[in-house]
Length: 326
Image 1 (cartoon, rainbow, N blue to C red):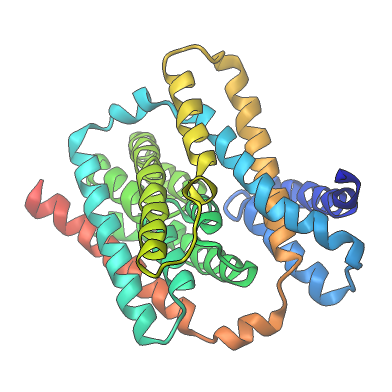
Image 2 (image 1 turned 30 degrees about the horizontal axis):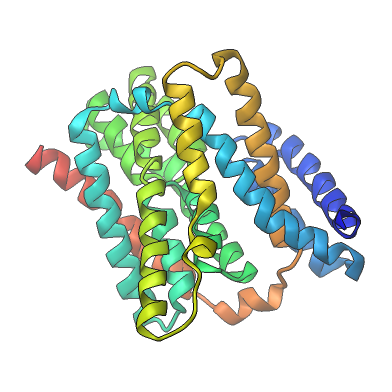
């Protein structure tokens, strides 16, 4: 039964291996972005056999979910609580601002609801990981996932260079900059890069703030599933709640709790984090290998403009909240 998946899974494994090596050489970009780019290049420069399609689809869906579950083992709820109520308040407010900004601009530019939601979700919480978690619940198409991740990645790279410069220009202290970077930069690797470029203490705080923000993936995904179920009932569509419920998010929470209470050996956390990143790379390679350049040309500038507006709104609102409402 599973033999039909092996060729595609093997191909995704090879692309993930190359992406991981490249990610180690260029940590600011990371293996996830390299994986989806390699997948897209493979699909557009070479003819991928149909025998690979089933395995690539499996990688893009199932392996994606397994990677999110494993991620839970590296996110202790106890560590996140150390950030305090103030950082959570800023995170929640900026998350709402990101969603609203992306939705308004995306809809004005004529973008689809799913792509708009993914860009808003990735900007609001934690970039590619948030998009990966929400995409199965929203039944996002491969091109929407690829477009949203590529958009988020573009602004992550800009943030690494712009944020430390602006922080020094505005004479921010370490606490202010760490909180700003942790709430306004999307991807963890970019948060770490920008934070530790500023200072050691700013980097430490930014990383912890980022972890607390990333946990918002769980309630947000549950809300997505609930909204989808309610809409299906109002339109008299037959949707099985058990089928659309994001069970992998539930297992993510279980994994986080297991780590938090000390049941899971801390010595194994680095291994689960590495395996999570590896499966994520395989999943994104699978997604990228089913996307064509024509889809990007068709989308035009709308995704980038939506991402830019949402990112700007989050960055500015985070500073305003810190300076005037904290």
